[in-house]
Amino acid sequence: MIKDITIGQYFPGSSVLHRMDSRIKIILTAVFIVMLFAAKDIAALAVGILFTLVTFLISKIPLKMMGKSLKPIIPLIIFTALLNLFFIRSGELLWQWRFIKITDQGIDTSVFMVIRIICLICGTSLLTYTTSPIDLTDAIERLLSPLKKIKVPVHELAMMMTIALRFIPTLIEETDKIMSAQKARGADMETGSLIQKAKAMVPILIPLFVASFRHAEELALAMECRCYHGGEGRTRMKQLKLSMIDLYGSLFTAAFLASVIAVNILMKK
Image (cartoon, rainbow, N blue to C red; front, side, top):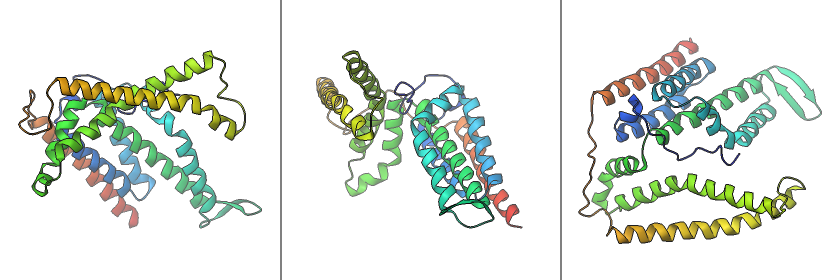
């Protein structure tokens, strides 16, 4: 399970999504989130599903990565489905046992919410899959640059956000190594009650905290050796420039958003 977590990873490539301006990709990701939450029924959400599949195919990221990105949130998906299934009482009653009731609207809402979460995770994961950490930092800094007028440390905020995102795969790999080492020493982390499993995590968390501080210290030393002193006077080797690919991508996303709105209007009639 630990090895399957792909949050924050970057997969180099030459696809259309890889070549798009990172600022546009951040904006279009926000539009994609609006698209999913604007869908009022399964017909409108089907447009979001189609958009997610098409963008994955365009990015040339293997579809199996979609499954890997979902594995860590399977408990959240199950919890959301059960929550909607058992606590929505409106609609036609299909099954009842004591205080537990299942209605047709509860089933529809559960399926709808599960599909929305899956599309949300898969679609937003493409941002980090197709954008390098350096480009992501520059894009965030450029988008937040108007806040500099009110003395907000935009560069430092963008750097912290990107470093945190970048170190997720590193810490996941470190966790996997520590767990393997503890299992080799006879530690049992898979059996027992919930409290016993929680206690078994202590020998993992302590070395993980130590490793995190070690990585932070090494990064700080490396940045100091390279004379890093914040965003003031900083130059960039790669300048962010808009191109026709960004225009086509924006029109493509806007068309899908308009389709979701149109389906919502048609389904109300």
